[in-house]
Length: 253
Ligand code: GLY
Image 1 (cartoon, rainbow, N blue to C red):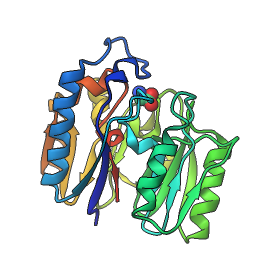
Image 2: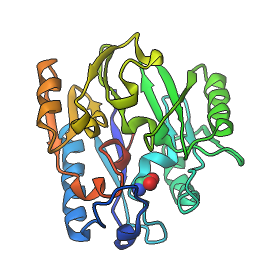
Image 3: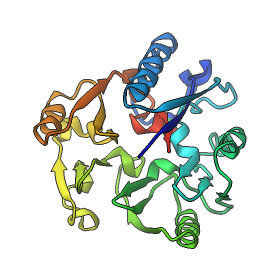
């Protein structure tokens, strides 16, 4: 059961965050309001939320998910693949040390964004992307193996992160979109394919019985609700402008 989450307040510099979209920069005040609502939603799901202050040194620092993988046995500090994000780990490390005795790190030349890591039924899938290379993935596989956990590599075609296009819910149910629909690595799961124009909703989170999903994807919401999941939607439109999704905004453990 997940009991806690770590979030970081968006910084003013978020208007300069990395993006592949052409939606323009986020509105800072709107991003702050949406972030506050996101925290409230996590609390509604029963989580204690640890709120970190804004870090103006790193425009993307509100996307805390990428800098660590928090497992039941250990924490792994990643080595984010975008040069402007690599050092985000430095300010997260002392926070993680408050909660974990066993902390591992990914070393150069490894690159690893935890947005490329999907936990599905006790197994970690690691996407090879522009942010995560084979060295980073193999280091993670070796670390997890030392703690009795398993992981494997998934090659990505076009998404930014693995979890941009796929999300595990519960009981074998997995949200898929685009390149992940019928991808061999995931055919053993019960796939819930989402329409192409609502693919972003694949980045949803199952937390203690509720699916947190982005607002504005009515077809995906209806599909998930039809599977019997209670759904809570959150407006994260300002974060979507900079390639952010529901999972990117928190570290959960
Ligand atoms: N803007 C989120 C990222 O590129 O990591």
